Length: 379
Image (cartoon, rainbow, N blue to C red):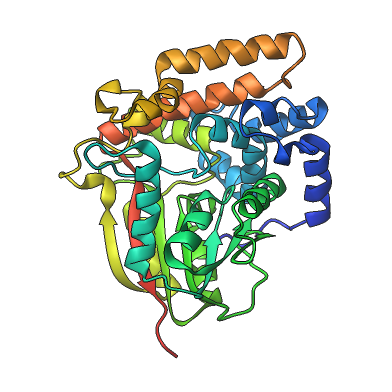
């Protein structure tokens, strides 16, 4: 069900916090260098604001009231999650914050880009279409969509720091004429009705408190005949909320990935229908048997699937040894006052999420790539 009330937006407050915490680090080299340039007091405030939703709230003790509290503060929860996690994402994964399928012998970066290209292909993105990227991160997928299809993209994001980084990267690649970024809550967009030829979301709408709510808002801003394509994070039909092990996996993913309310596939399909879309495609791409390696293998650090020596540093960072090294390293930096406090806690939360993502993938309880393509009927 859509929430009865949405969080009140305050762009002035968010901008002030961004300047206080991140300063000029948006233009620093990605990863550790940018991470060490944060204001310690502001970072501690973000840590407290985010982890208040998770500390001492184990899966076995979770109640609907606890989950409702997260949904009620969905925008703040997500914004502070990315205040804390963005630099770690860029350090460990890259500038496209999503998973992908892998072909035989395919390097990591190529597979990530192909996943983005496939979405553009099934949606039919073309030159100069006006396209909205809902939850654009630091703009990795948006830049790829522009280069692949020639469309014009507006990236929507509720995190000021990510917008600054995305804008910086777009200018660096000479794409500022085709790609813009704007601040906003995707549950209550400021765009007029019928504004876009197409809308896509890559593993972003999972942050919404209600899938029906976000899909309905996307439907509103699409032109009649326009298309919406999404890779959605969902629990599969195998997920049983009455199973404690299943709940631990789901909660570990939610906590480590800034998610207030993850749903099952059936809920997403019903939400698309209730929003008004004519569903043209729906498939769990994680369930394609022909893929030679699973989507989660980089997170698992399974070197047997390594196809390019150039991917070795990225995959090494994802292994147990790599994550343990980061844990000790950032802990040492915190202890001597170089890294802001809470950096290690954030890294540890991401590590727990990685283990839960792998478990969810292996046990077929979770998919990060349930593909849906829906069309808004012609007027």
